[in-house]
Length: 83
Image (cartoon, rainbow, N blue to C red; front, side):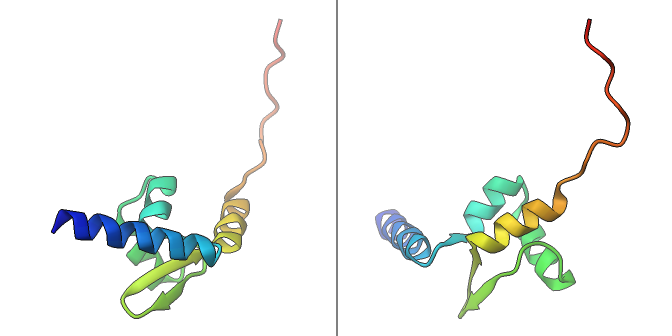
């Protein structure tokens, strides 16, 4: 049974890669967020754009990169000079 799940997980990863997407598990790892948090983001219209196919969710790599770019913040206060 575990072998079948591992094979399915590997196949999903291969398919996602071929479509230039990341899986929910990949994004969860990258963001340090639980799968339930990703689901909440989708429900609130937050987070990166996604594609739903049946009960699977994939995130296009370009959408993830664009979302990361939108989170980038410039320094507000000048840093202290190093001696």
